[in-house]
Image (cartoon, rainbow, N blue to C red):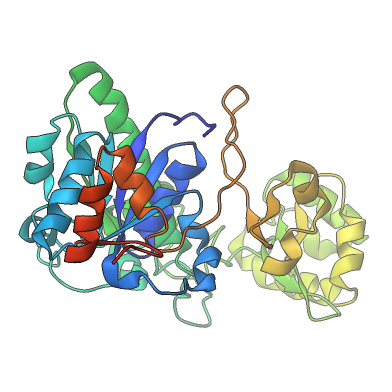
Length: 389
């Protein structure tokens, strides 16, 4: 497979959210990612909805019963020749199953072993259940998101699960792989969503220390407090986004709106006491035309105005089409890999596998004889689509 990670093999112990996202990032960059699915996830016939699991695209799937000794032995054997492996269990679960870091490093000392959790491997909350929203809450990343008229707004699960979780785990794995090239030794990566979400707020902490950020929601430049960094409803009920923070961008915004002489937009716009009046005027102006009309008016230039597009609309945007940000793979639209590389570009996005679709092929590539694969299937230690029984 093409991409800068071609030749790297990664074992992904099946999970949800940040783990699969990490695996997708690595697979998109050319790594061979073998997803170890649960044996009971295999269905006959295969569930066609599995093809829509974009986070699993480009991976191979082997279905294993990790409660069966032979299943555990199979994963450890695969770990012997892998470059990296990661899991998303609560702390201690992988050790109880027999596939923890010590078990794997005994077979492969150079293995990079990633651990993806919400709270981390230690601390008072380590054994508690949680979800993206609770990790963001404790990290301080949820509180600033929202308007002064209401409570915090969950930012989907892109800030915690994907940004602070899976993406940072992928970054950690690549960092550890680079270090292992010199040392010849693997190491354990403790990736916690609460840690990653906190890292994403680094700039806000700096502004807070400098007196340029209020802990009151909706009073700051980037949290809907500033009227020229916000969204506005248009005549058709759709929205435009405005991000004219700098003077030259704001001047172009006002000029494009045709209100350069309006004293509301005069000097002193950075004074928060002026913001309510500016917001009221912008609200009136943008409500006078449709989103499409505003998009056409500000389609070029530096006013920093853009139409707020839905998930289904984004792929039709002229810029996204020119850059092929989205593509149709496996019969539906999905985002293409990012970032881009000029010398080792990623290849065509692969489809998401059915659980157990590659069980036989993965085991054969690992050196298992046909008779051994048949025996593991009879024992129930592994299972594949159309498995021999």
